[in-house]
Image (cartoon, rainbow, N blue to C red; front, side, top):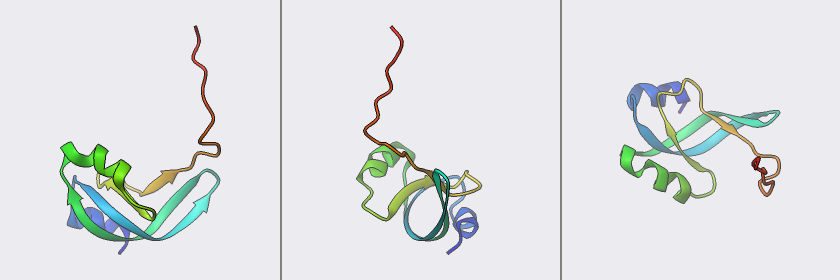
Length: 82
């Protein structure tokens, strides 16, 4: 299913999605094909986001595109000014 179809079926909601296809551009994945698994209540979205298994994401349908920003070095720490 295309992201726009998911947006129409589940307006203004968090949805747990299985990613079926995507394209990669620089530091982001642009998700092009998904399979909706279920809607997620807003109060549970953060927990569900971190519990989503490989190949799945929680995303809000208010976003025009389904884009995952990739971190090149997830172990990199940012030092805050003193």
